Image (cartoon, rainbow, N blue to C red; front, side, top):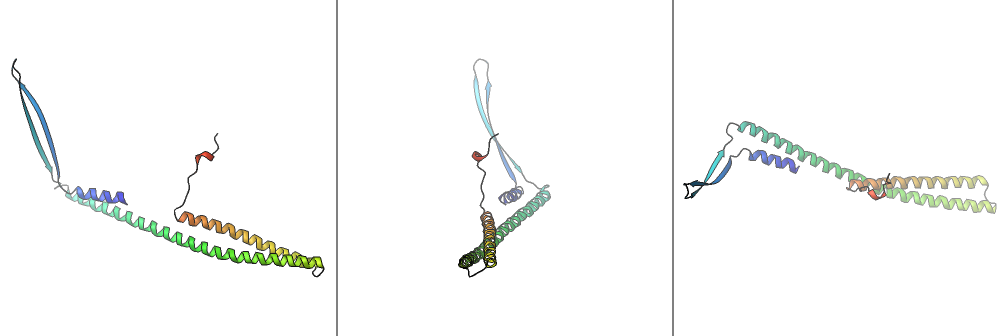
Length: 177
C-alpha cells in the first residue's frame, strides 16, 4: 500500500516542471614563458515543462491512483478477513471449553457409575451385564472427552495462527546428512 501511494506521488510530481542547474569551472593558460592563468566559472539552468506529454502523464497518474485504490481495498479486505477468522476462532474456542467441561462431568459420572456397578457385582447385587454396560458407557465417555480435547487443541492452534502467531524452524534440530 505504501509503494502504491509512493508511485502515485511520483506520477503527480512528473506533471510539474523540472529544473536542472549545471555548474562549470575552468582555468585558461596563456603566454609563452611567462604563464598567465585566468579562471572562469559559469552556471547554466534548464527548465523542462511537460506540455506536449501532459495527457500521457495525466493518464499515468490516473492509472497509478487506481492501483493505489486497489491496494487500499486489498488491505482492507485482508484486515477484515483476519478479524473474521480471529472472531470465529475465539468463538469456537469458547464453545470448546464449555463442551470439554460437560464431557469431563459426563466422564466423571460414568466412572462413578462403573465403580458402583463393579462394587455391586463384587457384593453380589448386580450381574456381569450391568458392570459391562457401565464400563462401556465409561469408556465411550473417555473417548469422547479425548476427541474433544484434540479438537480443542486444534482450535487453539487456529486462534494462535489467526492472531498472527507462527514459528520458524530452528535449524539446530534438523538432522544433518
